[in-house]
Length: 260
Image (cartoon, rainbow, N blue to C red; front, side, top):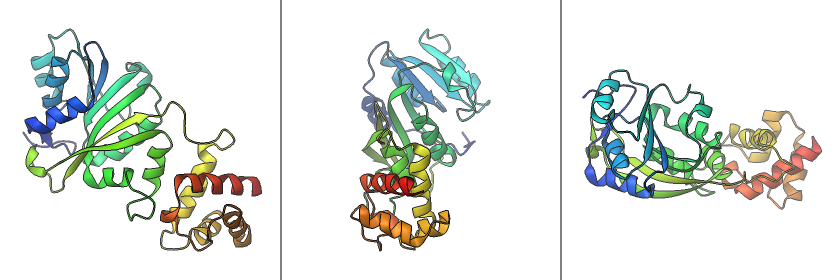
């Protein structure tokens, strides 16, 4: 089966079992599967008794999914692009399960983070992307994606999956991660997302420079003002963006917001 929409179909039973087990599905639980492809995860989710809604964009895969699963009363098929779908029409308080296409994995994760109607998501993505999500401060992979996930979900590594587990095999490895959505965004009430990411994006905007210099340059703020904010937060003015923790970015964004 050729890959369309950058899909690589999972064919490894052990990996599929691990993904479904990580979702901890019980009979009757609402589950949304994004991009079911050939139905390897779909079958296992239905066997667990999930009330399953699948969203598939590829019209060539729709007949096979309907033929295999269409008679199951717990199966609902939506032929749509998840990135364009009105998410309010999908089941609420659902568990998300997906082997995400590499080309749209990060945009789908970002869209999920902005949608509050789910509790747990078990997602397989390109290993490089999950490494960025799970990165610690000081790592070369630590950045805006790390912070985007951290303020809205707790992320954990489940397993790595090699290219040989897919058809056709990709040129890179994959990783399964589990996200537990936070009941409340990890920002103080007096700091909105817009103000937080205004500073974070500016800090990472010129990654090779010191964060203070990058923020001043990108936002057009006097360097003395930015330096004073760093010192007020107990941060060295020579720090680079990848060295700053989530809490330090929050403190810095609050201080610079007050000074703006």
